[in-house]
Amino acid sequence: MEVEALGYYASSSASTGDWESTWGTVSIRQEGTTINGCYEYRNGLITNASVDRRILTV
Image (cartoon, rainbow, N blue to C red):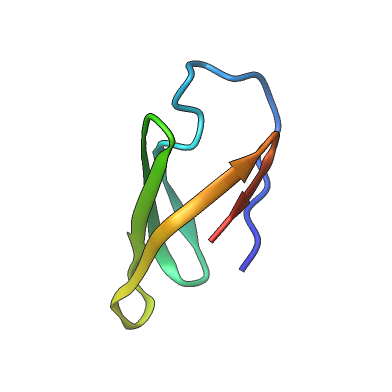
């Protein structure tokens, strides 16, 4: 799955949010440098994600 967002950073927690995708709702939460989340398809979990500039790797 790939998510692309265009625009300006609203805050330092730019990776925090909820999005609709072909896998259902994708929720990502960033607290400091820790990024975790989940998605509806098969109860998927996102753990130990990292961000480098504008690329979020999960």
